[in-house]
Image (cartoon, rainbow, N blue to C red; front, side):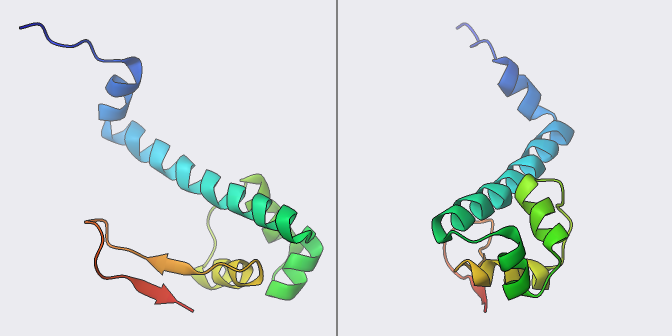
Length: 102
């Protein structure tokens, strides 16, 4: 039986270091895209979102552009609350229990 040739992606993703980098970049992209979409839908500016969340406009702009990725859960929670989202922690193992952060 012939072995199926691996794609470049398959080879790349098998490297644990590379997979970790891809996973991190994906999470960063998700937050950036969520902010962009929610701000556009709600017609809210960076300054207004920052003021309502009680954070610096620089933080919101950095998250929106994908430049800032290391913030506290409290800060992220306040920003998400303004745009109508909340943080929900779900186990990696699959559905079942979950933790909600108000």
